[in-house]
Length: 375
Image (cartoon, rainbow, N blue to C red):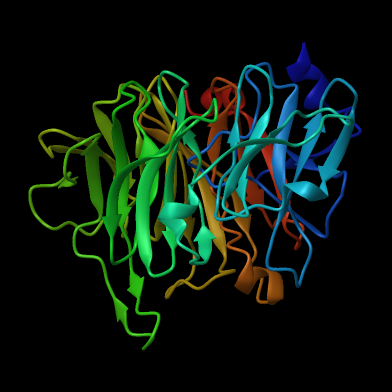
């Protein structure tokens, strides 16, 4: 029922837009609470399982921080919460309740989606770990352990990158590992509460500005053990995330393909190999469908023209959803407005950021509509 309410030709919240391939209907959020509105980074879901609540980023240039807002499909409105200014890329949504967890000021906080819900403190890294140093970010993406007991934090504290866990019940922080160069994008396994996926990233020396590229992008680590690379040899891939089975990860090879990689053997499967300029991908829980974005300009730059496409592995057919015009302006250059498409609400929708109307907006499409056009 909610899916009909939130996305229909009569919806007040969304405007129907016809994509540039096979007349695919795309719904763009037209209720504005910020000058620019953006979907979450693709690693984290932004919608409750019943599709009532859909969270998004609100951008207020030239502020360097974003705030969070929620679309309520039952009440038919959108609410913005100024207290939710957050660090790094992705807050965490409880898919059953629609509650939001976010990181700010070195701590994790929580609030419900209701207008009168209040912010609640959850946990922090202890002062004896921070030791008076600035906490640039607490977590690149907040992810929760498979047993629901902890959040993983890959904090940048001073000049170090310090990995550990914070219990949801306010219990003691547990240190996992410390790095002296940039490692981030840490994500709890969806099935194993003692394992994470993370990456080696480009590292900018804070004193000289000299950039050291990564040589071996994808890593895993078990609680109490040392980090280990996923691939047997240094591999230039990126934008990795867990498969639902906890035995594989998905990534982009940074040129044109989507890979599925076994985390224990490093064996890779090339799933979709004609995505020139590939940026990010996300996979339906069934593994049968893939959504991806890619740059339509070379060399790539922030705010570049991008496309979003859907791939049906059952039929080998694909469909382009949109061609996003470039945003050669302050917003495009400073707010990481790549589409970042992701399956949400148990795979019923794909949500992404679009510029088809020459502004930064949030778009939603039915997964079944894309399947129908690629069957």
